[in-house]
Image (cartoon, rainbow, N blue to C red; front, side, top):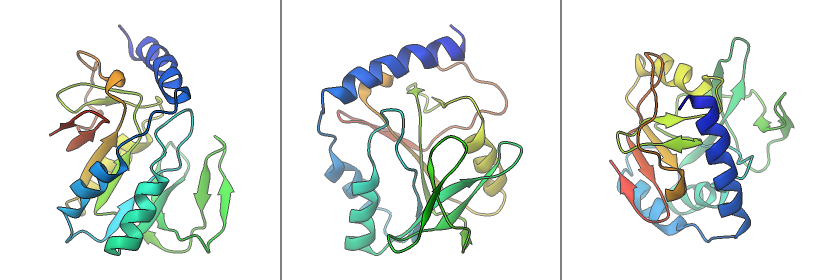
Length: 181
């Protein structure tokens, strides 16, 4: 099955799952991140399209461990950069209607939460089709070591994600039922 058909199918499944208001194990995610305490900057994302709301997780990591939070800002040519953000900073909506921080301080996160539509046991993902995260991961892989984590419902798992040379593998995927490494 091609990515666009998989994307459409899984988005419908995720929407149904999210409407049921299933409690996602935020503590499980925080505990996994605490094991990597030497890391200082987390790259998050603002949840859209029935994605799991990770904002509570991010705020918990900031408050209890002292991580700095950063979020992506979309640029031309399907590229993006991450900028430091706190609740006192303004947000603006990008062309997709996703909140973005002001471009005050550009950073390279130590841990990046990567949004995904579907994933497989090999830790590959299907995103929304723009390639923003794959480009970003490729770009900063040459500058530093960092950890890429996907957060998803277990129902988003498929047998095999069709990949090409541009697709980047994640380091970990955390679901409400298990953790893949």
